[in-house]
Amino acid sequence: MTHAFYSDAADKARAELSRSEQAAVESVRRALEDDPEHGRGLPDADPRSESYVVELLPEQTGGRGISVVYRYSQDLDAALILWLIAGP
Image 1 (cartoon, rainbow, N blue to C red):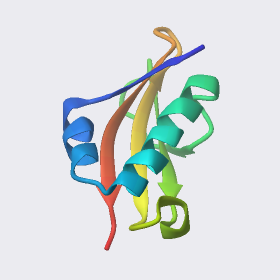
Image 2: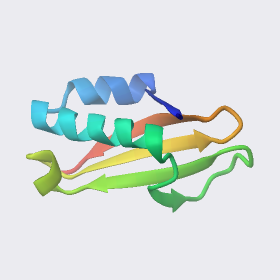
Image 3: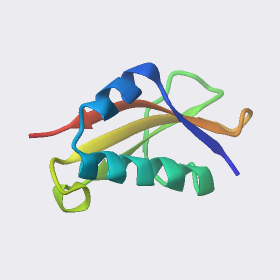
């Protein structure tokens, strides 16, 4: 099982979301523990990790659309959620 964590910035942004948005983001974090490479790949400057984004639609969050941006390291078997980007 992969460990998935929030960065300080993502944790702060998560605290500002509504309860339903927080629940949707937490469901993504839990899903990363089972399949850390299920997001859409992003360019990554670090050859030892891979960056991804999971895009949640307003229908999934009960509020705004949210992009969950994270980095996965196979060496550490860990995912770090870097940013939560909430749309209008």
